Image (cartoon, rainbow, N blue to C red; front, top):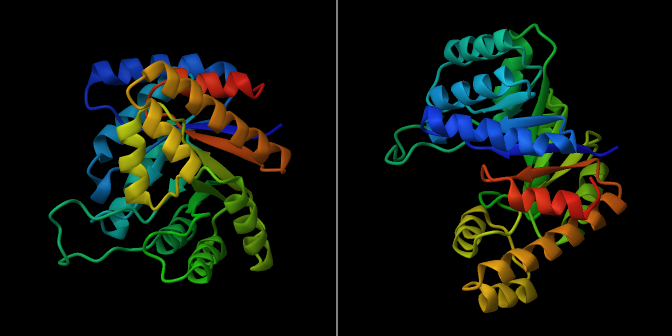
Length: 274
């Protein structure tokens, strides 16, 4: 069975957390291995991420946190991990993250490999560590080969698996997976899946993340952007076909970027028989 997981971002209010719990329970019928909760730039959502993970776990679902260095020192990161371990987590998504807006160049980004190394050296509990991977190359990478070298560094530091940035070209994933294998990366590389449910959000996210939207998909989205029903139907077709190709090509699972909403993810999961 492929590993299915869903990603949320932390709500700002207790009402938002209650809505998130309801969304998680709607998606629970697809038997996800876990639900992950993102961590804002510079640790800006530290408390909200912790609260969301706690609320979800209290409701009976396996929620786990994302974590990055932010502006924290080692002891603060270790203390936060200790608090998560008290909630019962057995997995974490370790990321470089971004500096908060307005930080300028006064603070330096610390990369995910050093975070993985810290966790392995200071945390005694068994903890599965997921890291990010980029089939279409990280926007900050000098070359595609350098990007794979960075990923290899995270695996060598002790990461157990990868979750990729979303993409819409299955061949990009297969090519990336083959190059990773050639570089000695032998951990599972789970494709990240972004449902298409909002035209403006998709264009904005993709431009920032360096995600290529195939020209034929872009042109069709341009046509249907004013018709929400047509956009959702087209998006479900495109992403469902992508998911089938990935699973048929032996992808180890699928990680859905839900944007805290169930319908689009639910439609795709149903379409592909999860």
